Length: 426
Image (cartoon, rainbow, N blue to C red; front, side):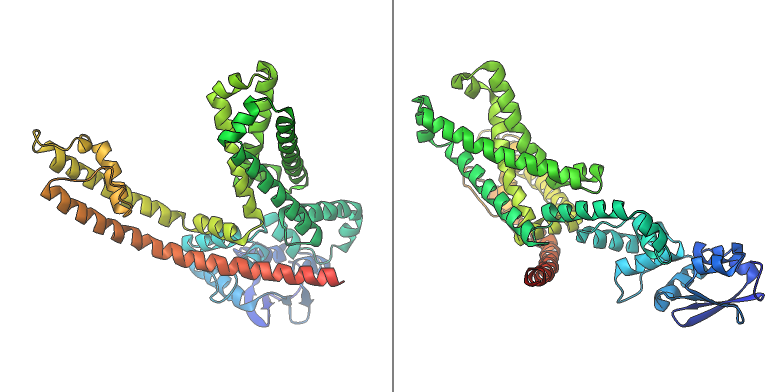
């Protein structure tokens, strides 16, 4: 810095901080340290929002309270979120000053990851940097006007296919997709009825052709939809990794595999039914039902709850597995291992006893196997009570998370409906 006084004043949202040039030079925040290398006021204004040469004061139109917490990180080395402030907004401030998510404390990193996974908008550090540094770059925007027009059209297409509540066209497209899903499920369920097989064995040509035409139309729609969504997606690798897109691929692929096998082996129905692989591939089309998660709030709430509560789900699974191992070993010993003459053959092994433990802990009780000795019955009662307690502990957290996810998605859906209504009226 070759101008101004020795003392530099940073004015962040009305709060002033005074530093010497030496401190500015080695300041931990990259945006502040960049001031030292500025040789003119023009370069200074590329870093800050305004500059007062007489007082050597640099103005930053940013969140003052967020900068207080960032300064605490500069002093103590620990960065945490501002209370009552959106995590994404604070993350925006961090990126502006040159910090990354790795500078946050571990607990706050988890909060940020959960917050970003809860939204359908995926932020990257490059995107946020481009946003916060977009002031004064209108000349670059005009240079890429044609590219932005194309990007705007691709974004509109992406929202039409990915967000059913974004526009009227998106709602129509989602409704058509739901109709095709229901049609394909009806065909799949009807094809397992005995009367359906009888009609096919009697070679009712009209019946067969109608079924094949409906199935081909449904598959064609799903394939075209998947291809278009892949083309207009922002990140192709991220698109392939998303669970719903993987499910779409698993639901579409069996039809083409079955068609290829049919073309290679001929139209012999007996030969096709003999193939276990074809039957497995055909039943995999039931995954089409998961496509409804794109259009129904309840399924979205369930998916978001499972994603948030995977730790509680793992904890529940560990509880059940530990209890199942203990009670199955005791049940096998009390029912079969102590008295071989009057032993209960249903408990001949620990794996066989595991089935009894799991249906007892979940209070299902099919009645296919049960203890006959007094110690075994006492153990059964303890197993049932323990199952109720162990299952109730994590389910409380899962329930509260489900309610929170439902209200968040409901609020987001209502906001989209309001914007859709205003768009329709305009």
